[in-house]
Length: 224
Length: 125
Figure 1 (cartoon, helix red, strand yellow):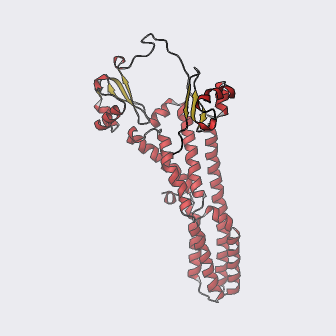
Figure 2 (cartoon, helix red, strand yellow):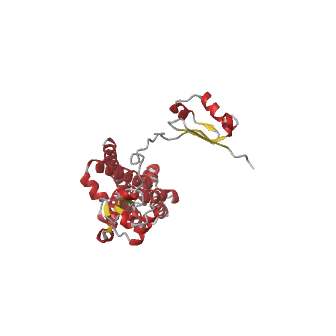
Figure 3 (cartoon, chains in turn brown, yellow):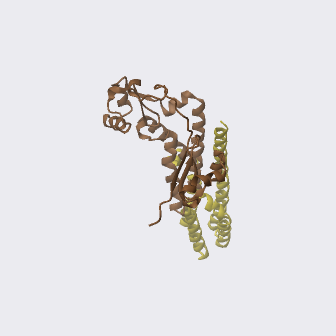
């Protein structure tokens, strides 16, 4: 019982503390996921390392945190207010090329970190940014002015073919029959495709096909 | 929503099971403590034989629930109670009429196990 209550206290304390710490700590996870990820392995490992401790001492916190995480994710999906309260809202850090220093301070986001994120996203000129948001998962989303973004096929009035995505039909010498069926081709067709590469599936490293029937095939390199 | 409800239900079930476990553990510890107290009373009345047999019965009761104890208690706590029982029985079999320390030690261990899982501020924090 004490473990159950302690787990609840630690879970919700971490939720509040990390919420107050700001978004940049989180990486790609939401707050509650981050807490579970950082605690669960440690908690579950205790009974494994100490065989004198009952396994329940590891399982109860794991199940408790799992349930809390499920409940919080369900509740935050239904309530915008709770979502804003627990995970916060995206923070606007750059508005029409102007860095909002107060927002940076609130989120404890340093100028070095901002510039690092912008460089990582290939942005050279802060003045070219219309908006930059620090998202609730700690990632920076940069929206450049329309004049700074590459034109799309529509902008250029060019007809672009939708090719779908390439399905892997052969991976490292193995045929993936489910993908072959989903792509709507027969094995005979496949053998025709690989004939120029030796004709044997086991000799093919990768073969993909997209919705426009474009085939990409790579033969296995000979072993040295 | 369904998953959230299942999670809430699971949490409530877990809480209920843990409460039930506290009651079961309390009942076991109560029965063992009662046996130890009967043994202590017999010794105070001068009947060392009865004191030893009551203590032995209490130890057998404790040992009969060893599987359950290993699931919910730490090995160290189980060992401490078992050691205290053996110490008490050793003194009683040796015919010693002064085994107060051994009784106190055993009752103290049993009491500490009982208090450990009680919902109190001191045990939570």
